Figure 1 (tube, rainbow over the protein chains, first blue to last red):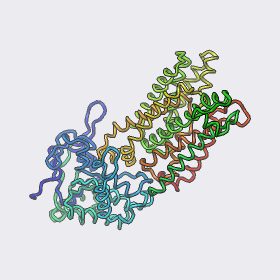
Figure 2 (cartoon, rainbow over the protein chains, first blue to last red; figure 1 turned 90 degrees about the vertical axis):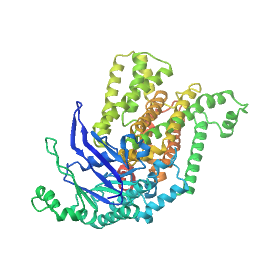
Figure 3 (spheres, chains in turn purple, brown; figure 1 turned 60 degrees about the horizontal axis):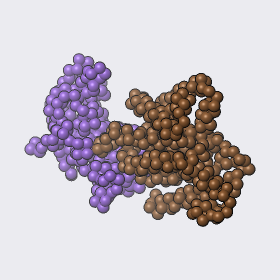
Length: 260
Length: 335
């Protein structure tokens, strides 16, 4: 593709430091490129390191080695404030503040753009309203988060990320805990944002079937061996990967009962 | 809630606080009419000298102390509840008051310190140690109930060290400490009041400046970090602020339970929001009101002595907490 990569990694090692100065490497030598205008879906079994990768890409966790480039700039050189306007995240956190409204949640997305006291200006209010409209939750703006369904709450969090005005949106299992209609709506919302607004969207999920049908690109994250060696991350479009048997190999080996 | 309703809420709280202060100044072993209280305060009173003395040297400092202490404890409670994402956190539950308590006991009984500056310093050190321990445990313990239990355990540890100190102390020192330990808004003289007021107003001012990061912390540490909040620094500032507020109030008034735990809940019921922009000022005002009310209730009708504060705050606090827990499904912040 001729588009510049929204996120690029160079020989990236992800994992955790362990007590005594050692490291537990989950994956090493990752060279990935996340493209703008695409929904990229990260697939892999539990423990394959999907969350670790997402957390590393958005700077919540430092890389063990190598580097992450955001539109060509190293993550290390970006200040927390600058970073917060580049990458927005939606996480699988099941606890949320029940006592704030959807509007207040989305307003918090303006955090990097507002002053010391966090007061919203006219332009900020416009961005918030626009974000609410973009994910289709404007009608519930004055509801408390505790009054929403899981799917609506997920949309509200996506709207918060939009209000941050970042070119990159990372989502950790945004469709977990959702019923089928809300799951499809969330997918539709993400596709609209990627295709309509040229956002780079990367999400992890266990829902292989939807991922194959809805995503533009797939990243298949293999499991790590106990020795720390892992296979390369397989990248490609769902159609190609289905045609050349990559998908079947990836899941067929791991899921003997027939995968998806 | 819209702006108009918030305006009326603030107006009502201010009016309540003003009336409670007036009652606090009028009521006591001697009833002084409001007109005379006003004249004494404005300096145009030419009646009995004893009345002037009672109002200026006893009731005025007691009322102002109650007001400041209540606001300080309530705001610390709210900040701790947000920081630990636990609606049952509070300075007395997490053992911070007990830490301050232990610091004072060590200073009073063991080192024989009597000046109030050394008491404040001792309380600050004690509260700071417990806060650091809680912070250390909060990284290692998943689940907020576990953290509360650790806080209770730290409180018990502090109490048992205090008992051991008491056992080896002379009778008059023990008496001095026990009297302090009852909790009392009347122990602060007009000369000491500026010290209390200075620390409390500084702490409250700092807390009002932290409204924006506190709101981001509502979303959880990871979301806050993604919004550009320096989570580690914010956590430290919030804890430093609560530590100073709790320690200073404990040093001057003794351990006061329940206000820090209960008032944020009352404020949430009044405002219906977790947004600190309104929740924090409403908590501050409600804390001042409720502590002033408690201070009034310590004056038993027809008696010269004051009831201990530790007998009053649970009567107001415990039923509210039980009500909140029993009806927690109706309260959005319990999810």
